[in-house]
Picture 1 (tube, rainbow, N blue to C red):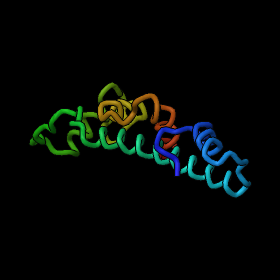
Picture 2: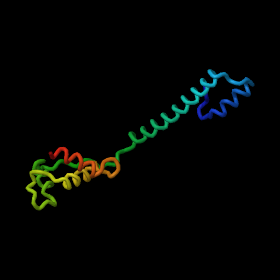
Picture 3: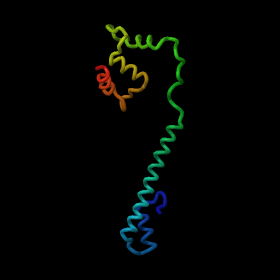
Picture 4: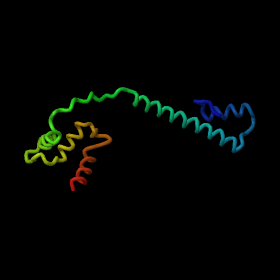
Length: 126
């Protein structure tokens, strides 16, 4: 079995020095398999450690605010009318929807964009 952090070349050198014979195909495959398993182990361990750091680190999000006494339907109407001079507040426009998603930090410009929300908004609006 390979030691952690050893390369295949180092393993071959130690093997040749100890045995002074050419490894058979099966022995070489066993060495290669051990090296691959060790490499995968190190990669998975590094990924798990970074994931653990993300999960354990405190959240950057602010504390949730107390819910206001205002009714959700009334808040929706107010938000839907915002910036829309012709709107009655019963329906929300795409631009107001995008504004809402940006405030909620759903649209970040990398994973979710306004183009994505526009596509889904049109599908739902039909």
